[in-house]
Length: 472
Image (cartoon, rainbow, N blue to C red):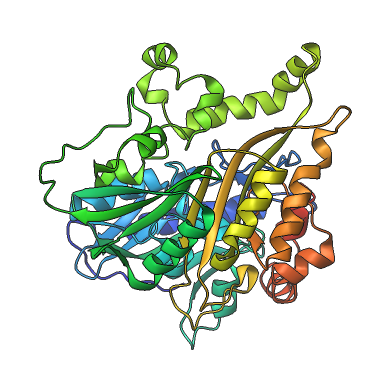
């Protein structure tokens, strides 16, 4: 295990020793665990929306939350794998820097975003979080610590490229060296309305190809679909000069996504922009009533954040409270439809037409992405590197016909089939229903099996299919 230990500005020279002690402690934990039981992380938070069987053997990785050091000259950071993006951004912003892609929710961890993927409004120019990783220390099932990079002469580059979308089934990232980019203090927003998906798609194509709209640079790009005839692209441009605009605050009484419908232009500090979706978990906080003014006044402001809502959801899933209440009130059963999918940009209108007709959840989030390095190959989530794709996110429940079984996944299966028909992919953080052969064909099964055999020959970590489809 080798790493860059050159002195950095304002950083204690002893960080490698402290980090190595944590690594040794973790290796001892793994060695002491039963050999016949699968292992996963013992975490107090999660951003997963799929059923998981209870596993008694959990690795305590709580010590791996923290930034080891920042190199503002070379614009890199050494970060532990369990560091949340909230903590990471708190460390980088004082230097006027951020990661190239900051996923929307504060408690997503860097290691989680790399092994389970992440996306945000910079992805049309910077790709996904794993594309700005320079090297990683990975704890494998064999108990080894492998330092892997994408360098042509790195003997472990197969693990480096197979790690994204492996969801901890190949190992866990303990340390990551990542690239950073300079940012400005403010982001000026323009909310551009479109009456049809076709017109919005044309604009997305123009902006992703040119990086501009109406002669102005676009640094951040995402969209919100409220209905088939009401959709907006939000264009963010970094600036040091707010001009006549006053920065808005969406961490209190005001709700960010509602401002998209009422403001043509807005201004946020860079920090508030990065977390604009977290306060109301996009729009999902409405399920808890916190968008109603009288409830919002009483709700603790420190609990207006995604991880607070997630705890309520986790409790409801454990107790089946909502499902039992619906039965008592003779309400239709509801299927949870919480998904992010990616389709080629040209297929976006067709997907949205299907979605409005057959699913009906609104609003919907859209976010374009392009592979940053067209020469790279990420086999477990492989796209055409020369094609622009669009992430479509939808997070709610759908009422089922009388007698419908919420656990059968009828709606989710239909979405999976249509996305595959459009040559798209689906993120695996939520429930999936693929047959094994189809799953392996979509998610690099041949490469995965080879890398799995090399780095986890004893199957200490669950197989990817068993973990994300069968709920292991």
